[in-house]
Length: 371
Image (cartoon, rainbow, N blue to C red; front, side, top):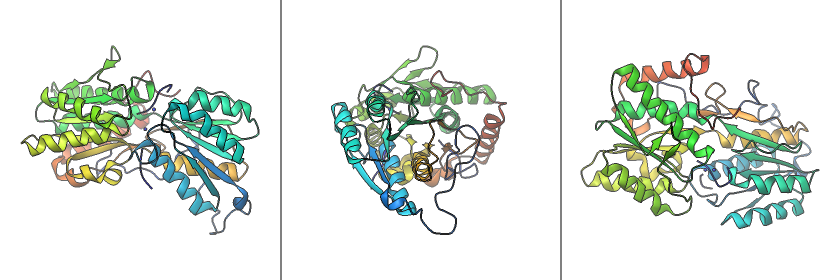
């Protein structure tokens, strides 16, 4: 299918080729490894044929090359690996959330995945109205109900590494970021990115500037939409005109608008790089391969499949998944085609940073980090 990103309105990791690649599975809660997808002997659960796994997108749709797409791919893989059946509903706008969830309840979905912070209110209502059905919501931890499982990520950790890599790659001494909407699931990326740039400056004695975000005031550049791709182009053009030569959009489908702006700028003689979020943009947004430095990854697909497997096995519980660098829930993607542009020293430094974040010697904090 295709790819996807959001709180009460919407959503928002990089490991150099020498660092760590995204791990295939999330850990349950804060330390235990989740069960594997299969039964171990190649057979499928006998109850699978009667299990209906469902998913409702936010307004980005399942082809956003990011947040929604990665989650949908997780359900598709669960169908193939577990033998369950699936039902899906795309939301064209927030007005579709409640009707789509009602449709899933009427169909008798055993577990419904809702993709993004924006669906929190509708998910809470559906869960209350259907206490015998199970729900899991990506990127929201506000619902306290026995039949709702939050799937959340400390993306500030991986974005910190992305910020460091961006600062190390910048030739102008300016890097930029912007969001779709000023909400926690977006600003957590921006906080981590800015902190990573600050860490680079501290360790390397540099003064790389971050355009588009002020972590202290929690104010910056926002498109105020996740749907109008051209807004991503507009903001990126502004950042480039101000001197940014690495740009990280945290805006779902607007990332494509940012990528278009970077390609156009480089065609005109600039040397600008792009950082993707949620999925590995090298795989999900191949049109931008030539300018893609790295991606801040959330392993949403793995989480979706794991939660489906747990429910199928009768092990559903409302304890949240919290994806971290330590458990592979978040990661920095390989540098792929731009690997040669990243020095061996920078790659070694990124390895050390990851180890430091995991062992706690490097503190990465955001007001939006899951607790």
